[in-house]
Image 1 (cartoon, rainbow, N blue to C red):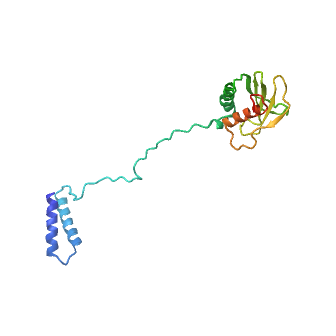
Image 2: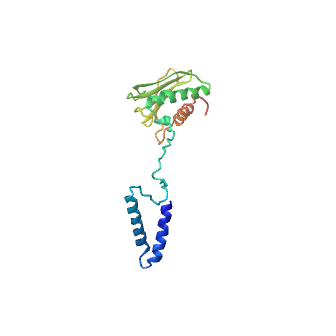
Image 3: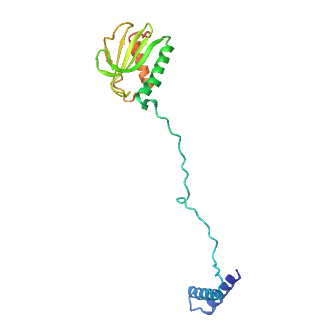
Amino acid sequence: MEENLELNDEVSSEISDNSDKSKSEVIKNISSEKDNNIDANNAKPQINSAPKVEIKNENDSTTKTISKPKKELPIEKKPFEEFINIHLIPALIEEVNQRGLEINNINLTNTTRPIAGDKCWVINCEIKNTCNFWLSFEKDDISSLKSISLSKPNQKPSIIESFLIDEKRITLKLIISRVLQRLNGQKLIGVN
């Protein structure tokens, strides 16, 4: 610290004595003389500088990755058989039961479509003492072409109708409401 003060005093006096020399030349000369004296004494030179301050740049700082909770896949995007067996069939049973009716049998099979006879996925449902219906999917995809057939108990279906052909987005609620709408339209589960 004292050496730094001495250096400053020398610079001031040299500047006043040597007005024709620039300040930077005087400072360089005095600094080099001091460094030579220090090196001659085998001592470590003292550096007159402010302590280093670490400045963190926003780019240098470590970024914490905050993981967002994963959104669960909508049930309509789940695999076909999972959607039908875990979501659609139980929801259909619940809706029919709420109307005071009972389902004797309901299942999904890859079999022949009633009337048409082509192979596809068919939900066959028998509502006790009321009706039977067959909801058919051309492929194992709820967006594929669909049809529905209806019949009274112990009868074979005589008509096959397209089902949800104009809908762009097929949802669980939409399928259930349209099935019930078809059954209601035939006065099978209630009065219009």
